[in-house]
Length: 290
Image 1 (spheres, rainbow, N blue to C red):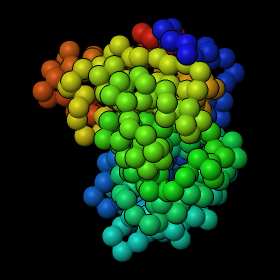
Image 2: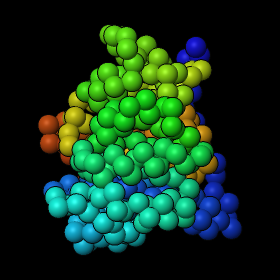
Image 3: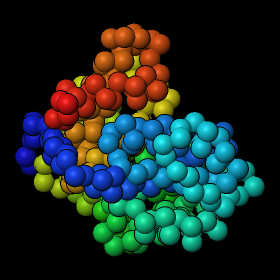
């Protein structure tokens, strides 16, 4: 197992570039009470360089999500009685998937039959690049033997609690106490990239791993994970492979958090402070010097 220490970079942008060159990202997110999760992920993808960002959200929260940021577009989805994604949204979701390069699923969707059904269908999409986070992971943990049906190209971004649920739902052995071993073994078990968040976030695939060095305790705040979802999805859309997008994503995300903590302090840091520092973080780490 190879340990990676270098940070990937994005290619310089050609003078004749257009927005389609930098990735079309669709983020399936949000529910009543959690419209901010969708908006945070969408704004983060935009600030990370995506040419086009679309948010597919339950119909009742769409006006709120659309008001927060004018630079992404929105797609209304059918919803259940509690304002969460319904299984009846499948046709709209599949149409959105077809029109976009990368999908992110999970921030604020809730744990419900509709979200689980949509996710099961996404897993069957051959080769589709999908970042799964938050309640997307909790719904995934409830799908029995999900790697057996998975044809998509996945990045999973669990925090330790979500990792425990994923592990318990899939593997019949005890989860290692060592974070690196946990990420590596789970990546091998499901043939996916795993981003195990926390102090020293671990990125692992079946052959290599990376341990992140940026970030601080002030980032333990609501929405910080949604920022990371948007960043990684954006970098996938800009041409980085899943492992490299995850490595650069966690590094830049942590660095932006460090810049925010320097300005705001760790106690008062909130997720939007991290988004606001993404431009400076990319200038310093990803080759965007102009």
